[in-house]
Image (cartoon, rainbow, N blue to C red; front, side):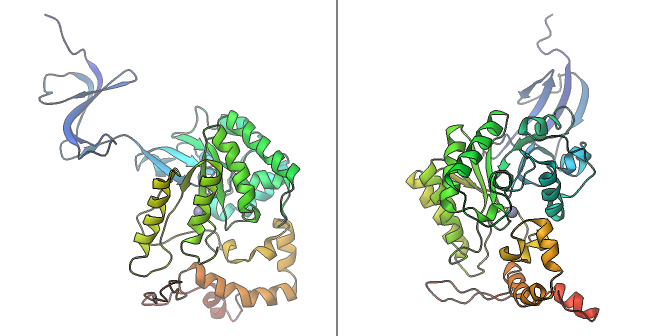
Length: 376
Ligand SMILES: [Zn+2]
């Protein structure tokens, strides 16, 4: 008698299969044989496998893709990457928020950039011997426990071509950045990212980002963006800029950590409508969103751009100057309050007031006062 089903390597029996297509799921047994997956509907009790996992009352689904991961350095130091693997993540988009770690022409700049972002991306002990995207990605190869999709931050491109200053990029510098982006994408990157609250990438104009995005689009890449949250009405204008970049460059835009900063009724619907209208118009725009109400970033975000100009070394020097500290003392708290969502927004057109948060949280200023010191 012919055995229709050879002994499989693995059977995951009788789970609710959610295959990622968006359907409601169905009962099935999933078999794994060599590198392929087979689905068995109905009674699978006759199947044999070297290993059996009962999945009744469980969901069986493909691995999750994390569209916004800050593990571009820590995964190199801890390639098992257990915090993510144990949550079922099998692919991560890294290099997000305009902050990525290749290409770098100077190890000194790479080192300074790692220190600058250590609040977000960590500062593990690593041998910083890569400079190209190719060499950087090789460091993950056959070591990292998850797949990575790398996007090149516009900050490293700017540091390499323009420097750390808040200045417009000249035509040659834009060409230089485009060439680095093209090379990096040919070496495996999936596109470009921005984090338009984070210097020096935040110094880029819309026109500059359109030019870079044209290059990404030409190679089938995406524009992955943490939008310029301080722009215009601070509500829809930041997303309008992202859509404009997609419209003018033809790039597929991905708005990352899409969230509602103006806590009034109907605001979320208006944000969604903005993106849906853009899609109808033909702009390829998508978003990701996280399912909790808090956000996180580095404390540096409360420092205004003018004091960060020139890079980390100049910033440290400036923080030692009494007149700079005096100016910051007046600017940091209001800025932090806006970031924390403590300031009452009004919808620009309707003037509708927002729902204030019921209680005030403690900030850095409070911690300073406890010690008899100012926030700066
Ligand atoms: Zn971000």
